[in-house]
Picture 1 (cartoon, rainbow, N blue to C red):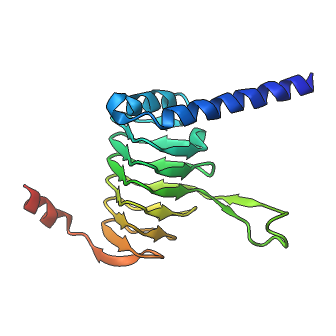
Picture 2 (cartoon, rainbow, N blue to C red):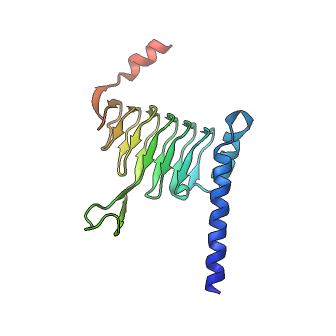
Picture 3 (tube, rainbow, N blue to C red):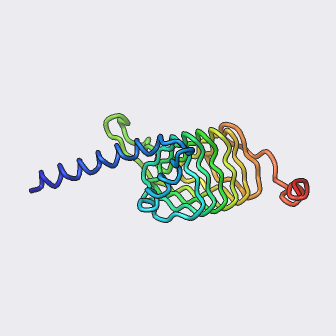
Amino acid sequence: MRIIKSAISQLVNICRIVFENIIRNIPIEVGGSRIRRFYYRFIFLSLGKNLLFSQGIVIHGAPKMKVGSNVVFGENTIIQANGDLTIGNNVLVGPGCFIWTVNHDFTVDNISLQQKYFLKPVIIEDNVWIGANVKIVAGVKIGTRSVGMGSVVTRDVEPNSLVAGNPAHFIKYLNIKAATKQIY
């Protein structure tokens, strides 16, 4: 009986992987984002409204993800959320980003044979723009209205600040009121 349950579990997992690979590559122009949003509504821990899931997104650990409203995931973004991922409202994740909540435990004697992992949550607050090709590592918190661009974010980012580089470092504080006046 245990063998049958194991076989059924493996078959269900294979079907899920095949299905996710199919819907991952459906273009937005033919309803791909809507299909992905419908599917993830049943998988994510919580999911807001007005979401855009671009083509080529890979998500591992979706049941550990909380996503707010008005969030855009750019093309070919890869997310590993097994360590808990919270994304606030009004967030733009540019194309080619990596968001990781898992890392290797490097304290073991033989990393290749004794692979161990640690899980650390990632929190992305409201009104955050994450530029293209940004890498976010486990345990990072990105503050409200902060910006990361083409960077490797290895530590927390203060609210209202611009960071860039590898590793990401502080560039400047954002003057939100001045920027709002220029737009309007």
